[in-house]
Image (cartoon, rainbow, N blue to C red; front, side, top):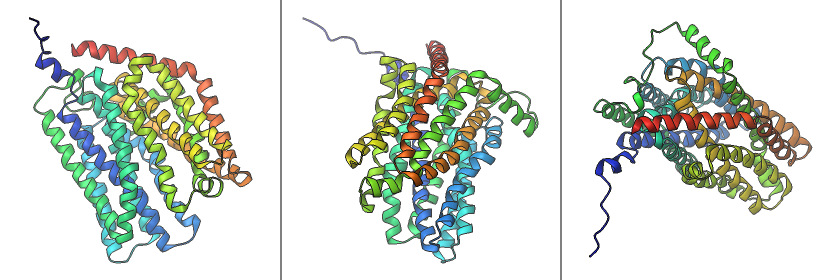
Length: 434
C-alpha cells in the first residue's frame, strides 16, 4: 500500500504568497491607473467641446509632460524623506480633490482650457509621487525572491486598468454626460487613498521583509532639500551604470515617441482603420503587455534576466520598424502586440534594479532622475516624429525603430551589467529570506 506524499509545510506555502499587504497595494495602484486612464481620455474629449484649435488641444500634452521635467526631482527628494506609502496616499488625496473640483466646474458649465491645463498639471505632479512610491514599495512588502512575480502582477494591473478598462469606460460615460468620467476619476483616487492606509495599518502588525526600515525611508539625518537633491542627482549621474542606463532609456523613449506622435494619422490614412476602431487597434499594445506580464517572471527563470531585457528592448525597436513596412492593419496590430510584450517583459525584469540595487535612502531620488531624463526626451522624439511624418508617415516608425535597435546595441554591456547586478541582489535577498 502506497501513501500519498507529505504536503508541504504550511509555513512554506505561506512563504510563496505575495501577501495581503501587496495585494491591497496592487488594488490601490489599479485604482490610480484606472483614474489616470479615464482622465487621459476625458480631458481631450472635454477640450474638443471647448476649442477646435489643434495647438490649444496639444497643450494638454505639454501639461502632461512638464511635471516629470520640473517637479519629479523634488518628488524624489520627498520620497527619500518620508514614509513612501503615506506619501502615495497624500498625493492621491490631493489628486482626488483637484479632480472633484474639476467635476464641479464641468457640472456648472464653466470649464475653460486653462482650467484643464492646471488640473492636469496638478494631477501629474501628484503622479510623480504616487507612481514611483508604489513601485519602490513593492520591495518592502514581498520577499526578495518574489519580486519578479510581484512586478509582473503590478505591470499587468497597470495595463488592464489603464488601457483595457479606463479608456472605453470613460468614452461610454462621456457619451452620457461629461461629468461622469471626471467624477469617476475622483472616486478612483479617493478609494486608492483608503486602500493604501489599510496597507500602512497591516505593516504595523508585522516586521519589514528584507530588513527595510519601518518607515519606508531613510534613517540618516536629513540635509536640506537642495542638498538632498544634489546628493541624489550626484549619485544618479555619478554612477557609471545608472548614467548609461538613463541614456539607454532616453534612446528607447525617443524612438517609441517618434511612432506614437503620428499614430492616429498613420492608423487612419495608411492602415485604413475606421475612427470607431482606433481604440481597438491601440488596445493591441495592452494585449501584448498583459501577455508579457503573465510570462515575465517565468522567462527570467527560464532564459535569464539579461536575455529577457536585451530581447525585450530589441523587440520594441523591431516591432516599431516593422510597422513602416506594412499597410495591413492586422500585421500592424501584430507588431503593436510585439511592442507590448517586449516593453512589459523588459520593464519587469529591470524594475528590480531600483528596488534592490540602488541604496534604500536614495531610491526615490534616483528613480525620479531616471524618469526625468527618459520623459525629457519624449517631447523631442514626438517633435522629430511629427517632422518626419510630414515627409512620409512610415518614416517615424522606421527611424524610431532603428534608433531603438541602435541604442540597445551600443549599450548592450550596460544592459548585461544591470541584469547581473539585479540577479546578485535578488539572490542575496532570497538567501536572507531563508
